[in-house]
Image 1: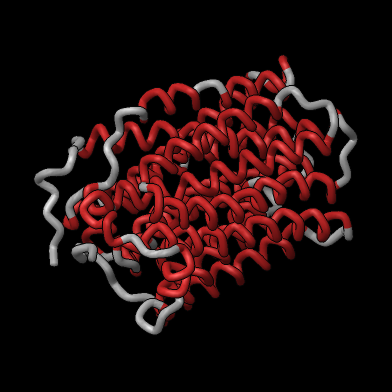
Image 2: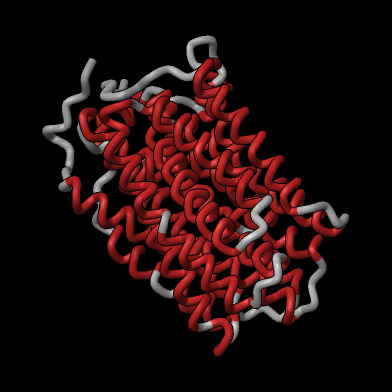
Length: 404
C-alpha cells in the first residue's frame, strides 16, 4: 500500500538536497583532507607505511561501528534525529584531531570522526530516498552523493594551498569548522514522510536485524554486503593512498597534491553521468558498468609508467569509482521496507567499512614488503570484478519501484 504524505511536514526536493548535501560535502572534505594529512604526517612524525595504513583504517573502524549502530537507531529514533547526532559527533571529533600531538590521540579522535561519518551517510541516503518520488529517487540520491566530490575537490584545493605553507593542523581546522554550519541548517529539517507515517509500526532492534536476514531479504542482503565490501575496500585502499602513491612514483609532495586535485575534478562528471543514466538504464546497469570502469582504470593506474598514463587513468579511476558510489547509495535503501530500511542500509555500509579497514592496511603492509604498486592495484581490480558479479547474479532491478 502506498503511503500518503499529505499530513506530514514537507520540504522541497531541492532544499532537502541542498541541506543534506551540504553536510555530505563537509564530511567528504574531512575524509579527503585525511589522505593529504597522512602524507604530511609521514614527514612530520616520521611514520612507517604500516602506521600510515593504520590512520586510514582506524577511521574506517569507526565507520563500521557508526554505520551499524546509527543505522539501527535511525529505525527507532527517526532519520532526522540520528542525522543530527552523527554530524555533531563528527564535527567535534574532527576539530579536536587538529590539536593532537601524538599518533595515539590522533587515531582515537579519528575513530569518533569515522563513527559519525559512517552513521551519517546511510541515514542521509535513506532519508532522501524516502522523501522524493519514485520516478526521480535514484537521480536525486546520486546527486546527493555528488556533493562528496565537491567536498573532496575543496579538500584537494585546501591541501594544495594550505598544507605546504601552513601545515596539516590548519587544514584540518578549516575542514572541520564548516560542518557546524550544516548542523544549523538541519535543525528545522522534517523527518522522512515514509518514516513519519510508519513510526508507530517500529519493531525491536533484534527483530529488525533478524528481518534483514529473513528469507525474503537474505539474497539482497548478501548481494549488498559483497558489493559494499568490495567497493569500500578498493576505494579506501586506493584513494587514501593516492597522494602517497604519487610520491612513491617519484613526484614531490606538492606535485602529487596537484595531480590528485586534477583527478578529483573527474569525480563530478562521474556522478552527473550516473545520475543522468540511472533512471533510464536502471541501477544494476549503472552500478555494474561503472564498477567495471573502475576495475580497468585501477589496473592501468597501478602499472602506469609515464606521467600522462598515470594522470589519464587516475582521472578515469575517479570518474568511474565515484559514479559507482552514487549508484550504490541509490540502490541500497530500495532493497528493504521502511521499518527496516535504515537498519539494512546501515548494516550493509558497516560490512563495507570492514573493507575500508582492510584496504589501507593491505596497501601499507604490501608497500612495506616492497611489493610493486601495480600488484597492489591488481588486487583492487579483482575485488571490484567480484562486486560486479554479485550485482549481476544476485541483484534485482529497483528502478522507479515504489517503496514499501
